[in-house]
Amino acid sequence: MFKKINSNDKELIEVARDVLQKRYRPVRHTVAAAVLCDSGRIYTGINIEACGYGPCAEPIAIGSAFTNGDWNIRTIVAVCKKDDRYPVLSPCGNCRQLIFDYAPDAMVIFDNNGKIMKTEARNLLPGHYNSEFGNT
Image (cartoon, rainbow, N blue to C red):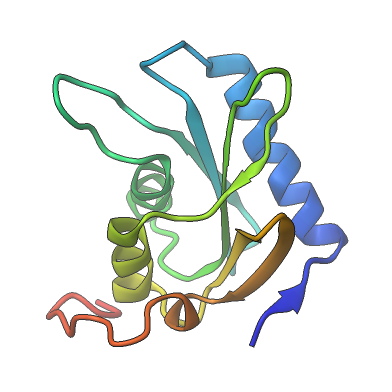
């Protein structure tokens, strides 16, 4: 079910890290995501912290892809800033549902107890909620 990452995955992680290094603002913007679409284009996003709660980086990156007409997500990854490092971050439950809704076959790169792995979005959310949004 979980697979090792490859050189293309490592490049996508570096894109997310580069975005966060450039756009990091303590408290406000602490996570970045990168999405690779079937077109070969990569879209990025950073989280938006606001009073109480703001959207995660993953939906912003996905929204950027969709805004540009790229509907087929191949791979997604998020990173956060910890001291001087930018480790891969596993998606939260809301992001897992969102990714499943729009790209259940997309590969999600995540931290599996300190080991960076990838798997299809559907594997990260067993017993998922069946929404009306899937693959539209």
